[in-house]
Image (cartoon, rainbow, N blue to C red; front, side, top):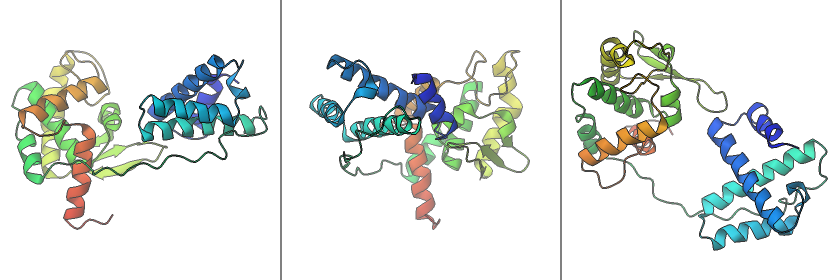
Length: 255
């Protein structure tokens, strides 16, 4: 079975996000290289011993428990598919338990830190765009991938909500709130077209040359404002998402 068939299975039947599909395929390729280095012709020939040896190899190399868990999940899913397609009779991961992951304390910002962060963008085109990005992340709790893939048609300024397709095809309608709505209006109505520099695009957030904002570009924005705010942690979209969730709970929202 080709990796392309496995990839299609993950996308179409398992309904996994693009990032998860890429990670699973990468993990199985890694395992494939490992078993071939041990003299096997194909990954489908791997037994329980090869899977255990692979996981032990990862542990010896200092890989985290979460990484080992994900790679085991990828291999297990791969062999599940091979069984369904009739390529193998047994799943060699069947009796292997995932290592327990130590619970880490969630990282989030205080309300005061969020307020300081949101006050930083200036009134340049970039600053107005960045304020919209930060406000949208905090007001809605959407993920980084959801933000950079969002289209202008996903934003309803009049009603004050955004539509997010999310992962596993589960669409969500999320209210923005007054401050976020104002920041989005300033960007979409006054700045976005100027940043496009005559180019046509339906992507919501663009960079200074009118191209869609990339994941790396978003991380650069986070780093810039995190440092300017004097935060003692490295700012990421996930930390803003965590802050959104924690502050909602602190204000009485249902889990």
